[in-house]
Length: 150
Image (cartoon, rainbow, N blue to C red; front, side, top):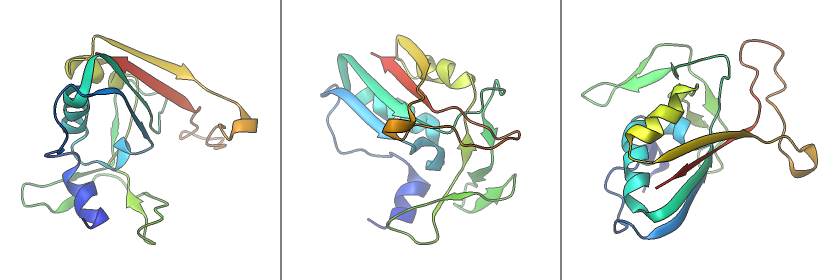
C-alpha cells in the first residue's frame, strides 16, 4: 500500500483479530494519522484483555489539548490550520505530514478509547538516543512515553 494512503486513512480496517496482542508498540506514528481517535480505538480493539500499548508521540507539555495542524475534509482534501510540518520518512523523500501535536488531553483520549489506565513518563537518556527536541522555544518537547492498559 502507498504510504500516503496509509497516512490519510490511518488504521482503518486493521486486518488483525480483536484482543490478540499482549503489547502494541508504535513510536512517533500517531501524529501522522489523520483520525488519531480511530487509531486509538483500533489499538484498543487489537490489544488483549490485560494487555497494553506503549508509544511515543510529539508532546507539548505546556498544552492541555492537542494542537491540530491539519485535517482531512469529507472529500479527502488536506486542510491546513497551521503551516505544514513534515517529519522524515524513509519510504517517501517528501516526508510525512504532521496532523497534530499532542498535549495532556491524550491521557483522557486513551481512557475514552476504553483503556482503563493511561500513564505518561519522561524518558531522558542521551546514551540510548532519548533526548529533547532541543528547541529553546514554544515547541520544546521532552521525550515522553505513553502506557495504556486494557
